[in-house]
Each structure stands twice: as C-alpha cells, then as structure tokens.
Image: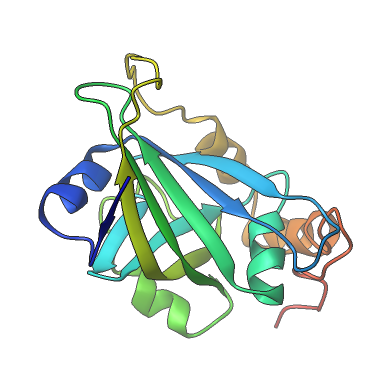
Amino acid sequence: MKLHERIDGRLREFIDAQAMFFVATAPAGPDGHVNLSPKGMGGTFAVLGEHRVAYLDYHGSGAETIAHLKENGRITLMFCAFQGPPNIVRLHGRGRAVPITDPEHAELARHFPAAPDRHGVRSIIDVDVHRVSDSCGYSVPLMTYEGDRDLLLRWNDRKTDADLAEYRRVRNGVSIDGLPIFATPEP
C-alpha cells in the first residue's frame, strides 16, 4: 500500500477511467449496519480537486449513505482495476449529501456535464478527501466492461418530480437502523 498526498496525475487518470466504484459508510458506535454500495454510470463521478470528489446519487432502494453522512460524515470510496494492470485506489474522507432541494445543488451539478440524465438524482454526495492510498489489487479478477445499464434511468423517467418526492418521504424516510434521511417534508 502507498499513501499519496493528493489526487493528481496517474491516480486521477485511473479514477476517471473506472466504470464502477464502491462506497462504504457506517453509523457511529458499535451497532448498526455497515453499508457498501456499487456505483456506476458514466458521467456521474467527478474529481473536483486534489482533495475533493463528488458523485450523483440517484433514487434507489435505500439511502443508507445519506443517513450515515448526516450522522457522522465518514465515507470511503474504492476503485478497482478490472482491466489492465492491477490497482486499487481508496479515498477516505468526510462526506455530505447535498439534496436536490438545497440551493447549493445546482452549483455542484455543473460538475457533471456528461451525466446521462439528471432526472432521478436525489442528491450529490460531496467528499472532502483526507487520505488517498493505492494497493496492488493482484487478486481482483479481470472482467470485461460491456456498457452501462439503463434500468435505473428508465425507472426514474417513469416518475414525476412529485412521485420522486413522495418516494423520498415514504421509502427513504429512515435508514435500516432507524436514522433519519428524508423524514421531514420537502418544500
């Protein structure tokens, strides 16, 4: 394992080239569930600086990441080379969710000009990275990337803005551990 001072050069190129990454968060304390989520879709991840990254968070089955970030801010993102030379990059940091109802959301959204569709985005996860490391990845299998799935985008396209607000209120009100997510009414 090697620690890096910042996200630049070879590391940034590697991160930008990955079609998929993983996000890990956990509630504070010894109880509760650790959450690990795969993320993908071209144009939905951005390196905003040497110590800052962000990604578009679409509506989905759960919102554990948002709940954990609201509670304690801890987050790790992991990128694995499934093609080419082996490598694993981990970004440890403090994150926050910027929901679509927040005035800052529009400013952050400009960092995603290649996003396939913004309808269905519920927040932007903004991460202040304080630790950057890479390791060998020798045991990560070689796999072929065939393309992005469009199922999530098609699901979101069938929903109105009001449907998505209701989904956040009903289905994303609390985490599996009972932490608040979108429990309060939206404007």
